[in-house]
Amino acid sequence: MNKKNQNSKKNEMIITKENNKPKAVNAKNMVENVLEQFNSAADEINLHPNIRKILSITNNEIIVHFPVKMDNGEVEIFSGYRVQHNNALGPYKGGLRYHPTVDIDAARALAMWMTWKTSLAGLPYGGAKGGIQLNPSLYSQTELERITRRFTYALGDNIGPEYDIPAPDVNTNSQTMAWMADTYMGTKPQTQRAMNQHVVTGKPVGSGGLEGRDRATGYGVFSTIRLWANKNNYILKDKTFIVQGFGNVGYWAAHFLEKEGARMIAVQDAFGSIYNEKGIEVESLFQYSLSNNGSVINYSGAERIDNKNFFATNCDILIPAALGNQITEQNAKDINAKLIAEGANGPTNVEGEKILLERGISIIPDILCNSGGVIASYFEWLQNRNGELWQMEEVIKKLEKKLNESFEKVFNYSKNNDTDLRTAAYCIAIERIEKAYVQRGIFP
Ligand code: NAD
Image: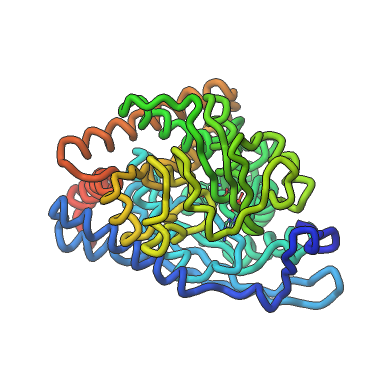
C-alpha cells in the first residue's frame, strides 16, 4: 500500500490522482438494486405500508470533509461518509471502505444490506456503512494512519460502542480498526477509555480483537456453500471454482474450499485475471500477492486472461468477492457455473439475477453468504463488553452454529413458499424488523 514502493509497471497499471475518481453511476444502481430487492420481498410478505416507508429510507447520513497533512507537508481534504440505515433491532453495525467509488449512494445501499444481514443473522444490531473516497494505494502507511485518525475524530460521537460500531471492509483491515479504536478511546475521559474499545470490531487480536475474525467472512462463504451442497447432494471434492477479488473474503473462502478438495481455476482482482485449468494453489497465490502489492497478476502458476472472459470461465462455483454490481444483464448469460456464492455485498443486480435463475443457476445471497463476518464481529463485541478472551475453536463452533441456523431458516422458507433464496432471506430479515416496530409502535 506504500506509494513509494508501488510497483505499478509490474502490474501494468499506473494509478494517478486523475483516475482516482468515484464511479457514482455504479453506486446509484446499487441503491436502486437494494430497494428493488427490498420491495419485492415486502410485496411477498405484505409488509405494512408504514414500515415499508420507514425501511425505504436511511435514518442518518453523515458526511465529513477533513484536512490531513501529507508526508510532503501539503494538506489534502478528504470526504468521509457514514450512513445509518436502521437501528430498530440494536446499535448500527457495518464496515468502512476506502475506495474511489465510496460516496453517499454507495454508503446508503451498503447500509441497507447491513440492516437485512444483521436481522437475518438474529443479531441485536441495525445496519450502517461508510468509508472514505480515496485510493489507498496512493498513500503511505503514515498518511493512511493520519487519514484514519482524522476521520475517526471527525465522526466523533456519530459512532460509539453502544451506538454505531464500524468494522473492516474493502481496503481497510485490523490495523485500520486499531487506529480507530485508539483515536476514539483517546477522546474519552481517562476513566472511560478501556470501556470503549468495542467501538469497532475486526481489531488485531492483541488489541481486543477476536481469534478467527480475520477468516470469519470467508469461512462463512465456504460454510454456506457446504450447507447448500449438503442440501443438494452435491459433492464439493474435485469441483472447480473461480474467485473475483482475492482479498480478505476471497482468499479465505478459497482457502477453506481448497481444503475441502475443490480446485480454484481462475482469479480476478483489481489488476486483471488469471487462469489455470489444472488448478491454482491458494496459499502460493496469496503469498505471491503479498509480495506483489496485493495483486495476483504475473503469478507464474497461471496464465493471464482477458477480464471480459473471466465470468465465462467454465466452473462449478463462482464466488464474487470484490465490489457491487459485477454480475448484470450484460454478463449473466455468459456465466458457466452451477452455483454463485456472494462473498461481496450486492455483486448481482436484479436483472442479472433474473437471467441466472431462469438458467437454473443457484445463488447464495450476500446477506446470508457473507454474514460470517458480522456474526464474528458480534462475538468480538460481546468479548470486549464482558471482559473475556475467546479461543479460536469456540469462535468457529459458535459461528458454524449461527450460520447453520440462518441457512436452515432461509432454505426452509424458500421451500415452503416456493421462492428463491434471496427473497426468502429478505422476507425473514424484514419480518423480524417489522415485528419490533409493531410491538413498539411509532413515537410519539
Ligand atoms: P479487500 O480489500 O480485502 O479485497 C478486495 C479484493 O477485490 C482485492 O483483491 C481487490 O484487488 C479486488 N477488487 C477491487 N476492485 C476490483 C474490481 N473492479 N474487479 C475485480 N476485483 C477487484 O476486501 P474484502 O474485505 O475482501 O471485501 C470484499 C467484498 O466482501 C466487499 O464487497 C465487502 O463489502 C464484502 N464483505 C467483506 C466483509 C469483511 O469482513 N471484510 C464482510 C462481508 C462482506
